[in-house]
Length: 318
Image 1 (cartoon, rainbow, N blue to C red):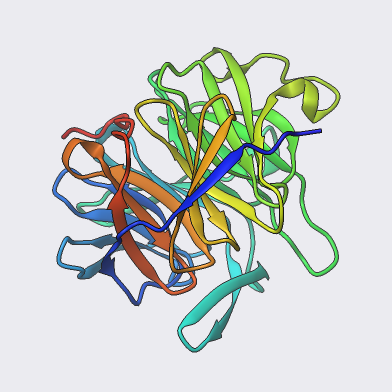
Image 2 (cartoon, helix red, strand yellow):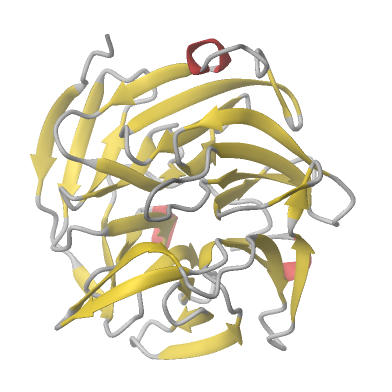
């Protein structure tokens, strides 16, 4: 049995930066004060300036889901291939695989020109199904989750892959997981954190070398990694970020919060936000003490103070 961590709830003072976004996700806080993010329903990579203006960097098609700044100042995007959305007054939410879905992919965008190229659309001879989130390491590669797609009567099994940023190598590292979503590295890059959406569990996997997981070939999930924490009740995990002290900040659906998980799983603080679809979080601002969160159902980007500095990202010069 997984013991639920001790939990406290806080309603932080938030600043609304932008509204009217079309299901935002994948925020990256840039050195100039802007936030680059994806708009999944709009199918774009966009930039939000500090005054709240939104500028489209590139039209990506499919379903851009996560973003990270990589080598050469390029933006790497996990594209889930497309989602079907329901629109209601002031609300938007996904309900499954898009009618025009073909495959998932990893895209690379030049933020200066808007040029887009597909870096990967398959792994080990299998099409990528629904890439979701990614994180770069210090060895020139990145980890990403493939959550898969959900259809009316069935869904894909999820996986974690590792790839080189230059397009020279991709391989599956962990299989299978239950709709793996957020992914991040501990400050020392010895632990890979992955959260599953429907189970609201945070897994920790030991990294033995770049792109290599200890015990990745165990016959069931409990041998592949260790559960750090699992939330009770009707809640689901989305994407995540790791702060400078190794805490895992996980966007939490339904309850509408960013959950601050202690790395030993002993405690979870909930920063409650005004949207049930809190999908992602990143750190920026002075001393990386500002948390930027995407409130996707209402189409907002907001910020609030985080209790610790965030973890500086690879390739992001401040």
